[in-house]
Image (cartoon, rainbow, N blue to C red; front, side):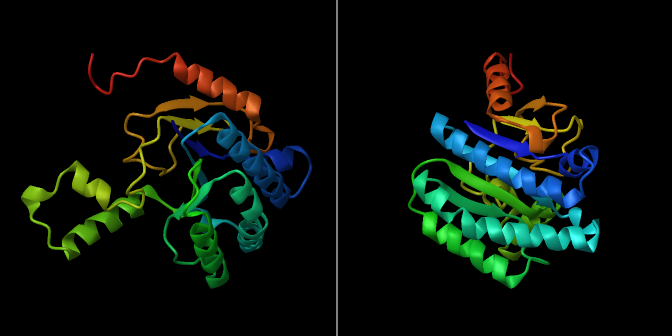
Length: 224
């Protein structure tokens, strides 16, 4: 099973608590560890988390700086967690705008865990689905692939998610009812579950609820 999550509501959670927005991101990072370890424990095949969208660069500079520092801290501090839980780590998205030291740490985590056989953890960082599809089209054109050979499988091989299964379940926190430019190609037949709970308050009980709800759904993939 592949679960994708839009981790929304960090800033709103912090404001409701009378805290600066960055506190929501800090607590949200703790929740990432908890949910990731739980997914590894219960045998989820893949977990893909929407960490930073390509549109998030419009946010205040101090918030973006904090997010970059927190990401760097995560990539350093969580290496032992990844190894302990046999988690294979990867990142999708564009490198543009990401500091070189963070890109280096991403590569370090990816290389360190490439032989792990448990949960596949993918972070979407500076990710936008329209950009992903645009980059796939550019790659196909550069390779000079004959139009008769361009099919869904061909496009899929040129997406950032090449080699990954499509998500079965999309979870969105904080109650918003939109995809926010996230995995638009890959989520074509995913089941969607939305909770009003903001990401810093999301927990394993809610994850269990989402999975239980998913298990009751009949998936026809366009058929009968």
